[in-house]
Length: 597
Image (cartoon, rainbow, N blue to C red):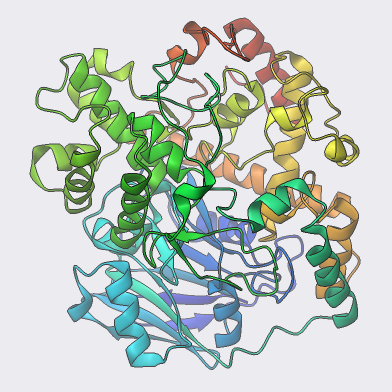
Protein backbone atom coordinates (compact mmCIF):
# COMPACT_ATOMS: atom_id res chain seq x y z
CA UNK A 1 0.00 0.00 0.00
CA UNK A 2 2.46 2.66 -1.15
CA UNK A 3 2.21 6.38 -0.54
CA UNK A 4 2.08 8.27 -3.84
CA UNK A 5 3.75 11.65 -3.41
CA UNK A 6 3.59 14.42 -6.03
CA UNK A 7 6.25 16.97 -5.12
CA UNK A 8 5.00 19.44 -7.73
CA UNK A 9 1.48 19.71 -6.33
CA UNK A 10 2.14 18.58 -2.79
CA UNK A 11 -0.59 15.96 -3.16
CA UNK A 12 -0.11 12.75 -1.15
CA UNK A 13 -2.35 9.71 -1.44
CA UNK A 14 -2.29 6.00 -0.76
CA UNK A 15 -2.75 3.34 -3.39
CA UNK A 16 -4.01 -0.06 -2.31
CA UNK A 17 -2.10 -2.84 -4.09
CA UNK A 18 -2.70 -5.48 -1.43
CA UNK A 19 -4.93 -7.57 -3.70
CA UNK A 20 -2.04 -8.08 -6.11
CA UNK A 21 0.13 -11.10 -5.47
CA UNK A 22 3.79 -11.76 -6.06
CA UNK A 23 5.33 -8.31 -5.65
CA UNK A 24 5.97 -8.48 -1.87
CA UNK A 25 5.96 -4.69 -1.80
CA UNK A 26 9.48 -4.54 -3.24
CA UNK A 27 11.09 -3.93 -6.61
CA UNK A 28 8.49 -5.92 -8.58
CA UNK A 29 5.82 -3.47 -7.41
CA UNK A 30 8.19 -0.58 -8.10
CA UNK A 31 8.69 -1.79 -11.67
CA UNK A 32 4.93 -2.02 -12.16
CA UNK A 33 4.46 1.54 -10.96
CA UNK A 34 7.36 2.73 -13.10
CA UNK A 35 5.74 1.21 -16.19
CA UNK A 36 2.19 2.26 -15.35
CA UNK A 37 2.81 5.82 -14.22
CA UNK A 38 5.53 7.08 -16.56
CA UNK A 39 5.59 7.53 -20.31
CA UNK A 40 8.13 5.62 -22.37
CA UNK A 41 11.23 7.61 -23.21
CA UNK A 42 10.89 10.01 -20.29
CA UNK A 43 14.17 11.62 -19.26
CA UNK A 44 15.24 10.42 -15.77
CA UNK A 45 15.43 14.08 -14.69
CA UNK A 46 11.95 14.95 -15.96
CA UNK A 47 9.67 15.97 -13.06
CA UNK A 48 7.21 13.27 -14.17
CA UNK A 49 9.82 10.55 -13.60
CA UNK A 50 9.04 8.19 -10.73
CA UNK A 51 11.24 7.28 -7.77
CA UNK A 52 10.34 4.24 -5.66
CA UNK A 53 11.66 3.59 -2.16
CA UNK A 54 10.49 0.58 -0.16
CA UNK A 55 11.08 -1.68 2.78
CA UNK A 56 8.36 -3.91 1.35
CA UNK A 57 6.66 -6.68 3.25
CA UNK A 58 9.91 -8.04 4.73
CA UNK A 59 12.56 -5.32 4.81
CA UNK A 60 13.17 -3.82 8.21
CA UNK A 61 11.89 -6.84 10.14
CA UNK A 62 13.96 -7.62 13.24
CA UNK A 63 15.52 -10.85 11.92
CA UNK A 64 18.67 -12.03 10.13
CA UNK A 65 18.92 -10.96 6.51
CA UNK A 66 15.96 -8.58 6.52
CA UNK A 67 17.62 -5.17 6.91
CA UNK A 68 17.32 -3.97 3.35
CA UNK A 69 15.51 -1.13 1.56
CA UNK A 70 15.22 -0.80 -2.22
CA UNK A 71 15.63 2.42 -4.23
CA UNK A 72 14.40 2.27 -7.84
CA UNK A 73 14.06 4.73 -10.73
CA UNK A 74 14.99 5.13 -14.36
CA UNK A 75 18.76 5.39 -14.22
CA UNK A 76 20.43 8.57 -15.50
CA UNK A 77 23.49 6.42 -16.22
CA UNK A 78 21.99 3.52 -18.18
CA UNK A 79 18.39 4.41 -19.08
CA UNK A 80 17.30 1.06 -17.63
CA UNK A 81 15.51 0.52 -14.34
CA UNK A 82 18.21 1.42 -11.85
CA UNK A 83 17.88 -0.52 -8.61
CA UNK A 84 20.07 -0.15 -5.54
CA UNK A 85 19.70 -1.59 -2.05
CA UNK A 86 20.69 -0.03 1.26
CA UNK A 87 21.57 -2.20 4.23
CA UNK A 88 21.54 -0.83 7.76
CA UNK A 89 18.61 0.43 9.85
CA UNK A 90 16.76 2.60 7.30
CA UNK A 91 14.24 -0.08 6.26
CA UNK A 92 13.36 -0.65 9.92
CA UNK A 93 13.01 3.11 10.28
CA UNK A 94 10.50 3.21 7.42
CA UNK A 95 8.40 0.49 9.00
CA UNK A 96 8.49 2.11 12.44
CA UNK A 97 7.40 5.42 10.89
CA UNK A 98 4.40 3.75 9.26
CA UNK A 99 5.38 3.41 5.59
CA UNK A 100 6.48 0.37 3.69
CA UNK A 101 6.77 2.06 0.30
CA UNK A 102 6.88 5.47 -1.37
CA UNK A 103 6.41 6.38 -5.03
CA UNK A 104 7.57 9.95 -5.62
CA UNK A 105 6.88 12.04 -8.72
CA UNK A 106 7.10 15.73 -9.54
CA UNK A 107 9.68 18.30 -8.52
CA UNK A 108 9.56 20.42 -5.40
CA UNK A 109 9.71 24.16 -6.03
CA UNK A 110 12.41 24.49 -3.37
CA UNK A 111 14.87 22.03 -1.85
CA UNK A 112 12.79 19.78 0.40
CA UNK A 113 12.66 16.51 2.27
CA UNK A 114 9.93 13.98 2.91
CA UNK A 115 9.00 13.34 6.54
CA UNK A 116 7.38 10.02 7.39
CA UNK A 117 5.92 10.02 10.90
CA UNK A 118 2.99 8.24 12.50
CA UNK A 119 1.87 6.70 9.24
CA UNK A 120 1.69 10.06 7.46
CA UNK A 121 3.93 11.69 4.86
CA UNK A 122 4.57 15.41 4.54
CA UNK A 123 6.84 17.63 2.42
CA UNK A 124 9.13 20.06 4.30
CA UNK A 125 11.37 22.73 2.82
CA UNK A 126 15.06 22.67 3.72
CA UNK A 127 16.89 25.19 1.56
CA UNK A 128 19.46 25.63 4.30
CA UNK A 129 20.67 22.06 3.63
CA UNK A 130 21.60 22.77 0.01
CA UNK A 131 25.20 21.90 -0.69
CA UNK A 132 25.71 20.01 2.55
CA UNK A 133 27.27 16.60 2.66
CA UNK A 134 25.37 13.58 3.86
CA UNK A 135 26.74 13.76 7.42
CA UNK A 136 25.94 17.45 7.97
CA UNK A 137 22.49 17.09 6.40
CA UNK A 138 21.72 14.03 8.52
CA UNK A 139 22.93 15.82 11.65
CA UNK A 140 20.65 18.76 10.93
CA UNK A 141 17.62 16.58 10.28
CA UNK A 142 18.23 14.54 13.43
CA UNK A 143 18.56 17.72 15.44
CA UNK A 144 15.17 18.72 14.08
CA UNK A 145 13.39 15.36 14.46
CA UNK A 146 15.31 13.51 17.16
CA UNK A 147 18.36 11.28 17.36
CA UNK A 148 16.19 8.26 16.61
CA UNK A 149 15.27 9.56 13.15
CA UNK A 150 16.46 7.53 10.18
CA UNK A 151 17.63 9.52 7.18
CA UNK A 152 18.27 8.74 3.51
CA UNK A 153 20.10 11.75 2.07
CA UNK A 154 22.03 12.93 -0.95
CA UNK A 155 25.16 15.04 -1.02
CA UNK A 156 26.42 17.61 -3.50
CA UNK A 157 26.87 14.95 -6.20
CA UNK A 158 23.14 14.31 -6.32
CA UNK A 159 22.32 18.01 -6.29
CA UNK A 160 24.74 18.52 -9.20
CA UNK A 161 23.19 15.64 -11.15
CA UNK A 162 26.32 13.51 -11.31
CA UNK A 163 25.00 10.55 -13.27
CA UNK A 164 26.25 8.04 -10.70
CA UNK A 165 25.31 9.93 -7.54
CA UNK A 166 24.22 7.72 -4.65
CA UNK A 167 21.72 7.91 -1.81
CA UNK A 168 23.25 7.26 1.63
CA UNK A 169 21.18 6.10 4.58
CA UNK A 170 22.04 6.77 8.21
CA UNK A 171 25.49 8.18 7.38
CA UNK A 172 27.19 5.01 6.17
CA UNK A 173 24.84 2.67 4.30
CA UNK A 174 24.69 3.56 0.62
CA UNK A 175 22.23 2.70 -2.12
CA UNK A 176 25.09 3.19 -4.47
CA UNK A 177 24.61 2.26 -8.06
CA UNK A 178 23.00 3.73 -11.18
CA UNK A 179 22.61 7.39 -10.17
CA UNK A 180 19.55 7.33 -7.95
CA UNK A 181 20.98 10.23 -5.94
CA UNK A 182 20.79 12.34 -9.10
CA UNK A 183 17.08 11.46 -9.42
CA UNK A 184 16.64 12.80 -5.88
CA UNK A 185 18.51 15.94 -6.93
CA UNK A 186 16.41 16.45 -10.06
CA UNK A 187 13.33 16.39 -7.84
CA UNK A 188 14.82 18.92 -5.40
CA UNK A 189 14.57 16.13 -2.83
CA UNK A 190 17.42 16.30 -0.33
CA UNK A 191 16.32 13.50 1.97
CA UNK A 192 13.69 11.15 3.31
CA UNK A 193 13.34 11.24 7.10
CA UNK A 194 11.60 8.50 9.09
CA UNK A 195 10.43 9.12 12.65
CA UNK A 196 8.71 6.31 14.53
CA UNK A 197 8.37 4.42 17.73
CA UNK A 198 11.27 2.10 16.95
CA UNK A 199 9.14 -0.92 17.87
CA UNK A 200 10.09 -4.03 15.88
CA UNK A 201 7.71 -5.01 13.09
CA UNK A 202 5.10 -7.60 14.01
CA UNK A 203 5.63 -11.09 12.61
CA UNK A 204 3.25 -14.03 12.30
CA UNK A 205 5.43 -16.52 14.20
CA UNK A 206 7.78 -14.75 16.65
CA UNK A 207 9.11 -18.01 18.08
CA UNK A 208 10.36 -19.28 14.75
CA UNK A 209 11.91 -15.93 13.90
CA UNK A 210 13.71 -15.88 17.25
CA UNK A 211 14.94 -19.46 16.74
CA UNK A 212 16.35 -18.54 13.33
CA UNK A 213 18.12 -15.58 14.89
CA UNK A 214 19.69 -17.86 17.49
CA UNK A 215 20.71 -20.34 14.80
CA UNK A 216 22.33 -17.55 12.77
CA UNK A 217 24.27 -16.36 15.81
CA UNK A 218 25.69 -19.86 16.24
CA UNK A 219 26.46 -20.14 12.52
CA UNK A 220 28.94 -17.28 12.78
CA UNK A 221 31.39 -19.79 14.21
CA UNK A 222 30.81 -22.46 11.56
CA UNK A 223 30.06 -20.73 8.25
CA UNK A 224 33.34 -19.44 6.77
CA UNK A 225 31.88 -16.47 4.92
CA UNK A 226 29.66 -15.41 7.81
CA UNK A 227 32.67 -15.59 10.12
CA UNK A 228 34.70 -13.49 7.69
CA UNK A 229 31.93 -10.90 7.49
CA UNK A 230 31.48 -10.70 11.25
CA UNK A 231 35.18 -10.51 12.06
CA UNK A 232 37.69 -7.70 11.71
CA UNK A 233 38.40 -6.17 9.25
CA UNK A 234 35.23 -7.64 7.70
CA UNK A 235 34.67 -9.09 4.28
CA UNK A 236 35.13 -5.69 2.60
CA UNK A 237 38.46 -5.09 4.34
CA UNK A 238 40.83 -6.75 1.89
CA UNK A 239 43.73 -8.56 3.52
CA UNK A 240 46.24 -11.20 2.44
CA UNK A 241 49.73 -11.83 1.21
CA UNK A 242 49.27 -11.38 -2.54
CA UNK A 243 46.76 -10.32 -5.15
CA UNK A 244 46.35 -13.12 -7.70
CA UNK A 245 46.67 -11.74 -11.24
CA UNK A 246 43.24 -11.69 -12.86
CA UNK A 247 41.12 -11.88 -9.73
CA UNK A 248 40.44 -8.14 -9.53
CA UNK A 249 40.91 -5.18 -11.82
CA UNK A 250 44.29 -3.46 -11.69
CA UNK A 251 44.66 -0.13 -13.49
CA UNK A 252 41.40 -0.32 -15.43
CA UNK A 253 41.73 -4.07 -16.14
CA UNK A 254 44.89 -3.26 -18.13
CA UNK A 255 47.35 -5.31 -16.02
CA UNK A 256 46.77 -9.03 -16.67
CA UNK A 257 50.01 -10.04 -14.98
CA UNK A 258 51.69 -9.33 -11.65
CA UNK A 259 49.87 -6.32 -10.16
CA UNK A 260 52.86 -4.89 -8.32
CA UNK A 261 50.57 -3.59 -5.58
CA UNK A 262 50.59 -4.25 -1.87
CA UNK A 263 47.72 -6.11 -0.20
CA UNK A 264 46.87 -4.85 3.31
CA UNK A 265 47.26 -7.10 6.32
CA UNK A 266 44.85 -7.24 9.25
CA UNK A 267 46.89 -4.98 11.50
CA UNK A 268 46.67 -2.18 8.94
CA UNK A 269 43.04 -1.63 9.94
CA UNK A 270 43.77 -1.19 13.66
CA UNK A 271 42.40 2.03 15.08
CA UNK A 272 40.41 2.91 11.97
CA UNK A 273 37.05 1.27 12.70
CA UNK A 274 33.96 3.12 13.89
CA UNK A 275 31.67 1.05 16.14
CA UNK A 276 28.48 0.00 14.32
CA UNK A 277 27.31 -3.00 16.35
CA UNK A 278 23.68 -3.78 15.57
CA UNK A 279 23.67 -1.67 12.41
CA UNK A 280 21.31 -4.14 10.71
CA UNK A 281 18.52 -4.70 13.25
CA UNK A 282 18.02 -8.36 14.09
CA UNK A 283 21.09 -9.60 12.21
CA UNK A 284 24.10 -10.59 14.33
CA UNK A 285 26.59 -10.37 11.48
CA UNK A 286 27.43 -6.63 11.38
CA UNK A 287 29.20 -7.28 8.08
CA UNK A 288 29.36 -3.70 6.80
CA UNK A 289 32.17 -2.15 8.80
CA UNK A 290 32.77 1.60 9.00
CA UNK A 291 36.31 2.97 8.59
CA UNK A 292 37.75 6.44 8.32
CA UNK A 293 34.87 8.34 9.91
CA UNK A 294 31.14 7.86 10.34
CA UNK A 295 30.41 8.04 6.59
CA UNK A 296 33.00 5.34 5.94
CA UNK A 297 30.70 2.37 5.40
CA UNK A 298 32.96 0.02 3.45
CA UNK A 299 31.21 -2.02 0.79
CA UNK A 300 33.08 -4.94 -0.72
CA UNK A 301 33.78 -3.10 -3.97
CA UNK A 302 35.17 0.14 -2.55
CA UNK A 303 38.77 -0.97 -2.00
CA UNK A 304 38.91 -2.60 -5.42
CA UNK A 305 37.42 0.39 -7.24
CA UNK A 306 39.24 3.21 -5.45
CA UNK A 307 42.43 1.29 -4.78
CA UNK A 308 43.97 -1.30 -7.09
CA UNK A 309 41.79 -0.24 -10.01
CA UNK A 310 43.48 3.18 -9.79
CA UNK A 311 46.92 1.73 -9.15
CA UNK A 312 46.72 2.83 -5.49
CA UNK A 313 47.56 0.58 -2.54
CA UNK A 314 47.66 3.23 0.21
CA UNK A 315 45.01 2.02 2.66
CA UNK A 316 44.61 5.40 4.35
CA UNK A 317 44.01 7.06 1.00
CA UNK A 318 41.43 4.47 -0.04
CA UNK A 319 39.50 4.51 3.25
CA UNK A 320 39.44 8.31 3.24
CA UNK A 321 38.26 8.35 -0.37
CA UNK A 322 35.51 5.86 0.41
CA UNK A 323 34.24 7.93 3.35
CA UNK A 324 34.36 11.10 1.27
CA UNK A 325 32.39 9.43 -1.52
CA UNK A 326 29.62 8.58 0.92
CA UNK A 327 29.56 12.09 2.32
CA UNK A 328 29.42 13.64 -1.15
CA UNK A 329 26.99 10.96 -2.36
CA UNK A 330 29.08 9.26 -5.05
CA UNK A 331 28.97 5.61 -6.12
CA UNK A 332 32.45 4.24 -5.51
CA UNK A 333 32.20 1.70 -8.35
CA UNK A 334 31.29 4.13 -11.11
CA UNK A 335 33.60 6.81 -9.75
CA UNK A 336 36.51 4.36 -9.62
CA UNK A 337 35.74 3.05 -13.10
CA UNK A 338 35.48 6.56 -14.52
CA UNK A 339 38.69 7.74 -12.89
CA UNK A 340 40.51 4.62 -14.10
CA UNK A 341 39.23 5.30 -17.61
CA UNK A 342 40.50 8.88 -17.40
CA UNK A 343 43.87 7.72 -16.07
CA UNK A 344 44.37 5.28 -18.91
CA UNK A 345 43.26 7.85 -21.49
CA UNK A 346 45.66 10.40 -20.01
CA UNK A 347 48.51 7.90 -20.09
CA UNK A 348 47.80 7.21 -23.76
CA UNK A 349 47.66 10.87 -24.73
CA UNK A 350 43.88 11.00 -25.22
CA UNK A 351 43.16 13.26 -22.24
CA UNK A 352 45.95 15.82 -21.85
CA UNK A 353 46.29 16.99 -18.26
CA UNK A 354 44.25 14.08 -17.00
CA UNK A 355 44.97 12.11 -13.82
CA UNK A 356 47.65 9.44 -13.47
CA UNK A 357 47.50 5.89 -12.13
CA UNK A 358 48.96 5.56 -8.65
CA UNK A 359 48.64 9.23 -7.69
CA UNK A 360 46.97 8.86 -4.30
CA UNK A 361 47.67 12.50 -3.41
CA UNK A 362 45.48 13.70 -6.29
CA UNK A 363 42.51 11.52 -5.37
CA UNK A 364 40.77 13.86 -2.87
CA UNK A 365 40.69 16.79 -5.29
CA UNK A 366 39.47 14.56 -8.13
CA UNK A 367 36.59 13.32 -6.00
CA UNK A 368 35.58 16.86 -5.04
CA UNK A 369 35.76 18.06 -8.64
CA UNK A 370 33.50 15.27 -9.87
CA UNK A 371 30.94 15.76 -7.09
CA UNK A 372 30.74 19.48 -7.75
CA UNK A 373 31.29 19.28 -11.53
CA UNK A 374 34.18 21.70 -11.07
CA UNK A 375 36.16 22.56 -14.18
CA UNK A 376 36.04 20.82 -17.56
CA UNK A 377 37.52 17.59 -16.21
CA UNK A 378 35.15 17.32 -13.24
CA UNK A 379 32.15 18.03 -15.47
CA UNK A 380 33.30 15.48 -18.05
CA UNK A 381 33.86 12.70 -15.53
CA UNK A 382 30.56 13.40 -13.76
CA UNK A 383 28.91 11.99 -16.89
CA UNK A 384 30.50 8.55 -16.42
CA UNK A 385 33.09 6.84 -18.58
CA UNK A 386 30.81 5.77 -21.46
CA UNK A 387 29.63 9.32 -22.12
CA UNK A 388 33.09 10.75 -21.50
CA UNK A 389 34.50 8.31 -24.07
CA UNK A 390 32.01 9.43 -26.68
CA UNK A 391 33.14 13.02 -26.14
CA UNK A 392 36.83 12.12 -26.37
CA UNK A 393 36.49 10.11 -29.56
CA UNK A 394 36.48 6.55 -30.93
CA UNK A 395 39.88 5.52 -29.59
CA UNK A 396 38.90 6.42 -26.04
CA UNK A 397 35.92 4.08 -26.14
CA UNK A 398 38.30 1.13 -25.98
CA UNK A 399 39.16 2.10 -22.40
CA UNK A 400 35.63 2.61 -21.06
CA UNK A 401 35.13 -0.58 -19.05
CA UNK A 402 31.35 -0.54 -19.07
CA UNK A 403 28.32 -2.68 -19.81
CA UNK A 404 25.00 -1.06 -20.70
CA UNK A 405 26.65 2.30 -20.01
CA UNK A 406 27.55 1.50 -16.38
CA UNK A 407 31.05 0.90 -15.06
CA UNK A 408 31.95 -2.73 -14.40
CA UNK A 409 32.56 -3.89 -10.86
CA UNK A 410 36.20 -4.78 -10.32
CA UNK A 411 35.88 -8.55 -10.02
CA UNK A 412 37.52 -9.66 -13.26
CA UNK A 413 35.28 -11.95 -15.32
CA UNK A 414 38.10 -13.49 -17.34
CA UNK A 415 38.67 -16.33 -14.83
CA UNK A 416 34.98 -16.27 -13.79
CA UNK A 417 32.88 -16.14 -16.97
CA UNK A 418 29.58 -16.48 -15.10
CA UNK A 419 30.28 -13.08 -13.60
CA UNK A 420 30.86 -11.78 -17.13
CA UNK A 421 27.51 -13.17 -18.29
CA UNK A 422 25.86 -11.43 -15.36
CA UNK A 423 27.59 -8.14 -16.16
CA UNK A 424 26.55 -8.28 -19.81
CA UNK A 425 23.06 -9.77 -19.60
CA UNK A 426 21.41 -8.68 -16.36
CA UNK A 427 18.76 -6.24 -17.65
CA UNK A 428 19.42 -3.60 -15.00
CA UNK A 429 23.14 -3.33 -15.62
CA UNK A 430 26.33 -4.86 -14.17
CA UNK A 431 26.41 -5.78 -10.47
CA UNK A 432 28.96 -7.93 -8.69
CA UNK A 433 26.29 -9.22 -6.29
CA UNK A 434 23.74 -10.22 -8.93
CA UNK A 435 24.81 -13.87 -8.69
CA UNK A 436 27.26 -15.93 -6.67
CA UNK A 437 30.79 -16.07 -8.07
CA UNK A 438 32.03 -18.99 -10.15
CA UNK A 439 35.03 -19.71 -7.94
CA UNK A 440 32.75 -20.53 -5.01
CA UNK A 441 31.45 -23.58 -6.90
CA UNK A 442 34.71 -24.79 -8.39
CA UNK A 443 35.05 -28.52 -7.49
CA UNK A 444 38.62 -28.00 -6.27
CA UNK A 445 38.86 -24.42 -5.01
CA UNK A 446 35.22 -23.82 -4.14
CA UNK A 447 33.20 -23.74 -0.92
CA UNK A 448 32.25 -27.40 -0.69
CA UNK A 449 29.68 -26.90 2.05
CA UNK A 450 27.60 -24.79 -0.38
CA UNK A 451 27.50 -27.33 -3.22
CA UNK A 452 24.22 -29.01 -2.15
CA UNK A 453 22.50 -25.65 -1.87
CA UNK A 454 23.77 -24.56 -5.28
CA UNK A 455 22.62 -27.83 -6.80
CA UNK A 456 19.09 -27.23 -5.47
CA UNK A 457 19.08 -24.00 -7.46
CA UNK A 458 20.32 -25.83 -10.58
CA UNK A 459 23.98 -24.89 -10.30
CA UNK A 460 25.97 -28.05 -9.58
CA UNK A 461 29.75 -27.60 -9.13
CA UNK A 462 31.76 -26.94 -12.30
CA UNK A 463 35.29 -25.69 -13.02
CA UNK A 464 35.25 -21.92 -12.52
CA UNK A 465 36.82 -21.02 -15.88
CA UNK A 466 34.59 -23.27 -17.97
CA UNK A 467 32.57 -21.29 -20.55
CA UNK A 468 29.90 -23.25 -22.40
CA UNK A 469 26.13 -23.61 -22.73
CA UNK A 470 25.82 -25.11 -19.26
CA UNK A 471 27.65 -22.09 -17.83
CA UNK A 472 24.98 -19.94 -19.46
CA UNK A 473 22.17 -21.98 -17.94
CA UNK A 474 23.83 -22.09 -14.51
CA UNK A 475 24.39 -18.34 -14.53
CA UNK A 476 20.76 -17.70 -15.44
CA UNK A 477 19.57 -19.93 -12.61
CA UNK A 478 21.80 -18.24 -10.06
CA UNK A 479 20.73 -14.84 -11.37
CA UNK A 480 17.08 -15.85 -10.93
CA UNK A 481 17.74 -17.09 -7.40
CA UNK A 482 19.46 -13.90 -6.27
CA UNK A 483 16.90 -11.82 -8.16
CA UNK A 484 14.33 -13.44 -5.88
CA UNK A 485 16.33 -12.29 -2.87
CA UNK A 486 16.39 -8.76 -4.28
CA UNK A 487 12.67 -8.86 -5.05
CA UNK A 488 11.86 -9.61 -1.40
CA UNK A 489 14.55 -7.35 0.12
CA UNK A 490 16.38 -10.40 1.47
CA UNK A 491 20.08 -9.81 2.05
CA UNK A 492 22.33 -11.73 -0.36
CA UNK A 493 25.15 -11.53 2.20
CA UNK A 494 23.13 -13.64 4.64
CA UNK A 495 21.59 -16.09 2.21
CA UNK A 496 21.93 -19.22 0.13
CA UNK A 497 23.93 -20.80 -1.36
CA UNK A 498 27.03 -19.79 0.64
CA UNK A 499 25.71 -18.10 3.80
CA UNK A 500 23.76 -19.41 6.81
CA UNK A 501 20.22 -18.73 5.53
CA UNK A 502 19.89 -21.86 3.42
CA UNK A 503 16.91 -22.32 1.11
CA UNK A 504 14.94 -24.16 3.79
CA UNK A 505 15.73 -21.53 6.42
CA UNK A 506 14.89 -18.69 4.03
CA UNK A 507 11.52 -20.16 3.18
CA UNK A 508 10.86 -20.84 6.87
CA UNK A 509 11.81 -17.25 7.72
CA UNK A 510 9.54 -15.71 5.09
CA UNK A 511 6.68 -17.98 6.15
CA UNK A 512 7.20 -17.04 9.82
CA UNK A 513 7.19 -13.31 9.03
CA UNK A 514 4.25 -13.22 6.60
CA UNK A 515 2.14 -16.03 8.00
CA UNK A 516 1.66 -17.60 4.57
CA UNK A 517 3.42 -20.64 3.10
CA UNK A 518 6.47 -19.69 1.07
CA UNK A 519 8.54 -22.11 -1.01
CA UNK A 520 11.63 -22.18 -3.19
CA UNK A 521 9.31 -22.03 -6.21
CA UNK A 522 7.82 -18.81 -4.82
CA UNK A 523 11.31 -17.34 -4.44
CA UNK A 524 12.30 -18.27 -8.00
CA UNK A 525 8.97 -17.00 -9.36
CA UNK A 526 9.58 -13.63 -7.70
CA UNK A 527 13.10 -13.59 -9.11
CA UNK A 528 11.85 -14.31 -12.62
CA UNK A 529 9.14 -11.63 -12.31
CA UNK A 530 11.72 -9.05 -11.31
CA UNK A 531 14.04 -9.96 -14.21
CA UNK A 532 11.15 -10.00 -16.67
CA UNK A 533 9.96 -6.61 -15.42
CA UNK A 534 13.41 -5.07 -15.75
CA UNK A 535 13.88 -6.48 -19.23
CA UNK A 536 10.43 -5.33 -20.39
CA UNK A 537 11.16 -1.85 -19.09
CA UNK A 538 14.53 -1.74 -20.88
CA UNK A 539 12.94 -2.86 -24.15
CA UNK A 540 10.23 -0.22 -23.78
CA UNK A 541 12.71 2.56 -23.07
CA UNK A 542 15.08 1.53 -25.86
CA UNK A 543 12.22 1.69 -28.39
CA UNK A 544 11.18 5.18 -27.26
CA UNK A 545 14.48 7.03 -26.89
CA UNK A 546 17.93 7.17 -28.44
CA UNK A 547 19.47 8.97 -25.48
CA UNK A 548 20.92 5.77 -24.02
CA UNK A 549 22.70 3.99 -26.87
CA UNK A 550 24.12 1.21 -24.69
CA UNK A 551 20.80 0.31 -23.05
CA UNK A 552 20.35 -3.02 -24.83
CA UNK A 553 24.01 -3.73 -25.48
CA UNK A 554 25.23 -7.14 -24.40
CA UNK A 555 28.85 -6.51 -25.16
CA UNK A 556 31.70 -6.53 -22.71
CA UNK A 557 34.85 -4.48 -23.30
CA UNK A 558 37.10 -6.05 -25.93
CA UNK A 559 39.98 -6.23 -23.46
CA UNK A 560 38.22 -9.02 -21.57
CA UNK A 561 38.07 -11.12 -24.75
CA UNK A 562 41.42 -10.22 -26.29
CA UNK A 563 43.90 -9.82 -23.42
CA UNK A 564 44.32 -13.07 -21.45
CA UNK A 565 45.69 -13.23 -17.94
CA UNK A 566 49.42 -13.84 -18.41
CA UNK A 567 50.53 -15.60 -15.23
CA UNK A 568 49.47 -17.17 -11.95
CA UNK A 569 46.46 -19.26 -11.02
CA UNK A 570 44.36 -17.94 -13.89
CA UNK A 571 46.99 -17.85 -16.62
CA UNK A 572 45.41 -17.88 -20.07
CA UNK A 573 41.95 -16.89 -18.86
CA UNK A 574 39.96 -14.78 -21.34
CA UNK A 575 36.37 -14.76 -22.55
CA UNK A 576 36.28 -16.59 -25.87
CA UNK A 577 33.78 -14.74 -28.04
CA UNK A 578 32.20 -17.78 -29.69
CA UNK A 579 31.83 -19.63 -26.38
CA UNK A 580 30.42 -16.50 -24.78
CA UNK A 581 27.81 -16.21 -27.54
CA UNK A 582 26.76 -19.85 -27.07
CA UNK A 583 26.51 -19.37 -23.31
CA UNK A 584 24.43 -16.24 -23.88
CA UNK A 585 21.92 -18.16 -26.01
CA UNK A 586 21.59 -20.80 -23.30
CA UNK A 587 21.17 -18.06 -20.68
CA UNK A 588 18.27 -16.61 -22.66
CA UNK A 589 16.67 -20.01 -23.16
CA UNK A 590 16.81 -20.71 -19.44
CA UNK A 591 14.98 -17.46 -18.64
CA UNK A 592 12.46 -17.92 -21.45
CA UNK A 593 13.53 -14.77 -23.27
CA UNK A 594 13.80 -14.23 -27.00
CA UNK A 595 17.36 -14.73 -28.21
CA UNK A 596 19.64 -11.76 -28.28
CA UNK A 597 20.77 -10.72 -31.73
